[in-house]
Image 1 (cartoon, rainbow, N blue to C red):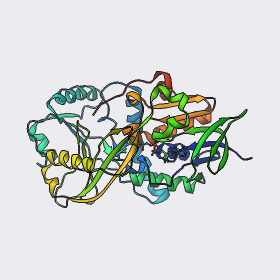
Image 2: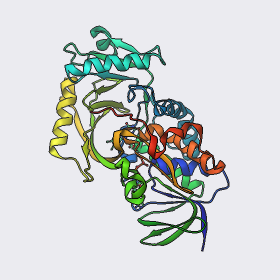
Image 3: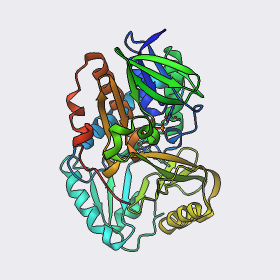
Length: 374
Ligand SMILES: Cc1cc2nc3c(=O)[nH]c(=O)nc-3n(C[C@H](O)[C@H](O)[C@H](O)COP(=O)(O)OP(=O)(O)OC[C@H]3O[C@@H](n4cnc5c(N)ncnc54)[C@H](O)[C@@H]3O)c2cc1C
């Protein structure tokens, strides 16, 4: 019977970031996934590193998000050197715009909170909004805030690069291997799958929206569930919009390379279905072209959906739920952003046996409410 040092269940950005961090040390790691790479949220995300856009008040997660965002420039160049994949880290900045009159006040409050930490953030006048968007935004007296340093990556390429990196670092990977049960042994755990059992001294559940099913007694109070999101990729050769636009109703337009724009994302709670509905597509196109009318003339290239891991009140969970059994989930709209730092923190925890200070607030029983409802 072979005993791994660490078994990670789930090969999304969370699981792979921990595996990659552990691979720097002499730790024998296996990562198990029931599907093949490319199918779930991590490959489908918008790639916004919205460490500021996503936060409205003081919280431990906000500070983790800022630290994680700062890791991306180095990570992008490391991955380029290591696996020759450019994750397209771009400093696009982000403009947040109210979708309804009621949301204008929320933007002002968020501006006041963020401004304490970043004096580059601006509330925009109409003319400044036009200037920053090359006159592409239909303004109509909107309240807008500019966050110059909320960056982005290409999430699909980032997740592929992590996969390529852990392959080269000899992390053992088992796909088409669904975990049905985790059984506690005298020492370590038996992880039962449809392809037999794996044994690990420590186990991390990083199963995204499905994590609750694997450690259900522990996650009951958090109601970890899936929130389906649909997204579109369009091309417009002459639009010349370089800044991400994020509406308070959850619709966003992210400028990507080669005159492409990603339009996201719908949110359907407890929906694990796959594919883009006509209702979702119409909503995205309507919302996007309401704010940028020229998008009506764009060419549709691609559409897809993914399931975000949501936990009640958007409380991320990073905890040891039983001796040497860990769970990391519930990163909802921010899993890409948070992944490098959480990978590093979980690695530190596993190696030292001490919960890092920055993870103190993510125990199952006393997480804080980071909710922003769209
Ligand atoms: C449309 C959309 C846009 C998004 N935009 C952004 C964004 O701009 N910025 C950002 O930071 N985040 C964004 N996100 C959120 C981000 O994608 C997620 O938070 C992140 O990918 C979650 O990563 P994960 O590793 O926890 O989960 P996943 O990527 O879902 O990976 C979980 C893995 O666990 C496996 N698994 C589950 N159960 C089992 C089992 N029983 N046995 C074996 N394997 C199992 C699954 O097969 C899956 O591969 C977006 C998400 C969506 C859908």
